[in-house]
Image 1 (cartoon, rainbow, N blue to C red):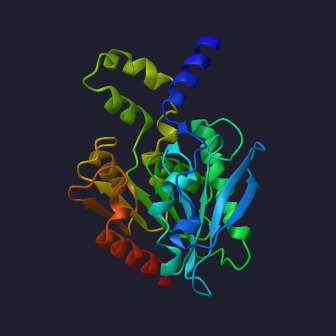
Image 2 (spheres, one colour):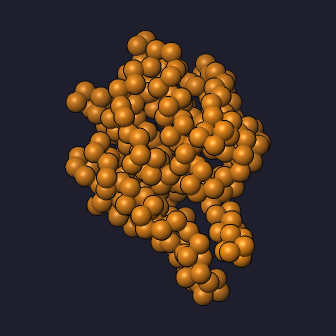
Length: 268
């Protein structure tokens, strides 16, 4: 039993690369920001930046679940354009990332996304029926699982460069290396198929927009295709020609398509 627990912890640790370094600040992008603190279900104290829309009232509120590396300040450039487009943003750090307390686990960060949803609904002036969730890489996979439990008021789910299954991404990570022989053992230590993002996304009833770079060397584009295929209509897959891992929102043309999808979802 102890050995199984150690294996699980070791494998889970490969999904998380947090740090506390400050990579960028809202002020560098001309943004007004507030520090927001809230608790996850186990009491872990989590930190977020609240970036209010430049217009009042805001069109809606985006909950941003970032990727598995660094902290919220490293991922800020990918969402810093949204306030000027009329959207509030709550961009938060999972447990163990940045200024957030605790130690990340694959189930724990799902709880953190749910806590972030609840925190966004509590922000002054937020219309809790006009929410959009943007999940990137690990954040996309994690947000799919969170939304399967709580999707109240979420009008659009944008899932960028995410993996479809835990075992699948573990196999992809070791393909062509000596570690491939350990893949079956590693898979047994990961969440089961009932917790896979592709399973979760099949239960959602809001529109889904999948973004994935065709040259993504971290999470192959086939994962994005599987997520799209599992989602209910209305759904859309944007395969980014020449796109690498989570670089879609660095491109002006993709931002315009994403913004159009957001505006459309809130008009329905």
